[in-house]
Each structure stands twice: as C-alpha cells, then as structure tokens.
Length: 155
Image 1: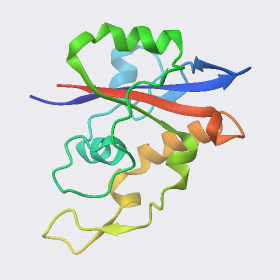
Image 2: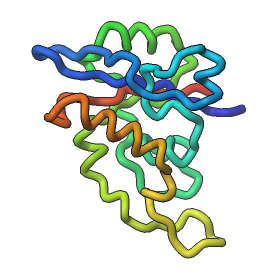
Image 3: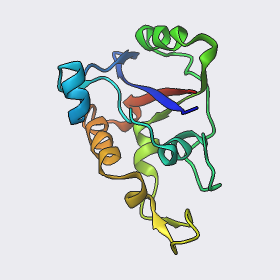
C-alpha cells in the first residue's frame, strides 16, 4: 500500500492564518487530467525521501529529517482544518513547517542513502520540483515565519 501527502500552504494575514490559493504549478499529467495549470498544494507528489525529510515518515535510511510530526497547528485556517477532518482516522503524522524552517536547512549537506553510492546531497536528492515549490513559498511573504506548509499523510 502506498503513502501519499496532503499539503497546503498558509499565510498569516492580519494576525490570522489563511489558506493560500492555487499558486503551485501542476505537472503535465495533472494539468491534462484536472484541466487547470495550478493547485493549492506544495510538495504534492509521492516521494518517500521527501516524506522522511519533512516528518520522518517512511525514513528507511534513518537519515536526518526536519522535524518529528508536530500535529496540526492550534491556529490552523478553517479551510485546512476541514480538509484534515475529511480524512478522519485515515490521515496520520500531521505536521507543519514554516518557510523559515525550510529555508534554514543546509541542503548541501551530504548523507548516505544508498550503500551503492558514496554520498548524496539533499539538494540533489529532493530534486528541482521541491525547490521550485520552496521558491514560490518564499515569495508569498517577505517574512518566512508568516508562511507555513501544513501536511499529513495517508496509506
């Protein structure tokens, strides 16, 4: 059984968190299927390395990760709370990361993932699409603490 991520960007506006709209480019398959070019979900593809990096989910390599799952934030936006509620007991490892947390990580660090290879960097491992979404998140507000990604997994 596979594991998928459900993720939404939120931005603090006048002291209150609001879900960000459809600003993340979709890949070609999704554009053709959904008949639109953008969605509201950063990091929305199945990537177990990305899952372990974000929240230690499916971390088969026991490699460094950003954070243990924190649960949903207490001040979550109503829209994202409703989306999480829709998953009832099927969602797990709920968490969130600020853009500041994402930007502060040293992606040029090397680590051992595959014993066949010597080392790999997080930059090469996470891939261009991850950093494209991170760039969009970074540009949503000049203060990286005013933007976050709220996410959970299902399987």
